[in-house]
Image (cartoon, rainbow, N blue to C red; front, top):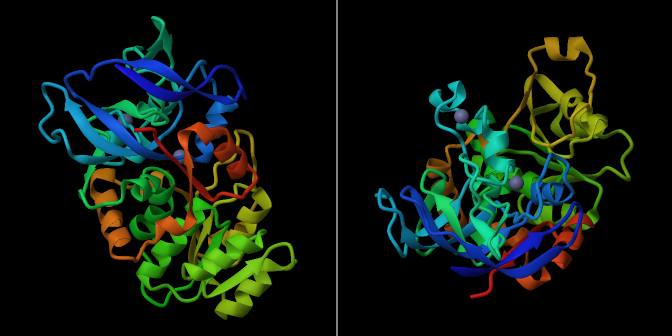
Length: 367
Ligand SMILES: [Zn+2]
Ligand SMILES: [Zn+2]
């Protein structure tokens, strides 16, 4: 079928909104009418070929929409179901078999190769393949193909243009808190960097009843939003030279839990140094290969934990519906961090995201 999608033709090229051909769903696939898609830093890293990337390519990995067709073996979905498309995993590697699919050993290829596992593409133009299946979805278009294994059915009253933001950034930040560190009410929490992932972690910390909740960032408008979403204290890193001491002042002894989302080694070290003995720092920031960080060994020896987390350790078919309930219940007001753009303005969305002006751009697809 003919669809409208945003294509990048060359490394760091602009997005071009064009008519493409989309294949029919295979037996285990869904045809999804995409209503909206979040834009995440990884889309722009893909555009700029931080990782080996084939062009032309359709990006997008935070899609939400309505099922319009199902393959012959699909039993979990039917036309009309509302879905969020989550990250892919192989199902066969040791981590997938141990139900730790966010650490799938084949995740990189499934997310980045631009094809299904057999090398086929979802999209083409004038008979030539267009690389697609980015995160096995390529959601920057008004229709796409999703594999039933990675699609998550959500309540039909869920606002699709808001819940799309859960697919990657939302469940990454919220999952780090609710699935990994699982704070108890009254425990202290600090988030370094309040972009979409950091704010999702912060909203989850509020759901868990953390107190104090401290947000650290360089940008005052983001800190103001952090306060609106539940931060009891904010620290502007530009104005406060000793962030670790300030966190100790606020918490008394140090923080029980910290989230690091900036991917800057100096900030990561602060997120560890401000911990209480026995506290945990979770790294969510995505640094480039070759980035080193140093910690003092006695700091770690004193019971502190430092660990990385991908996609919030979540099993999306379980966790995303839970977050949708929090959204509908007003406890996870994801809409406050969203700026909407029509797909036609995707380049403006990318520019405003890179400039820090839009925290979570969401693209509305043409109907
Ligand atoms: Zn796997
Ligand atoms: Zn992402």
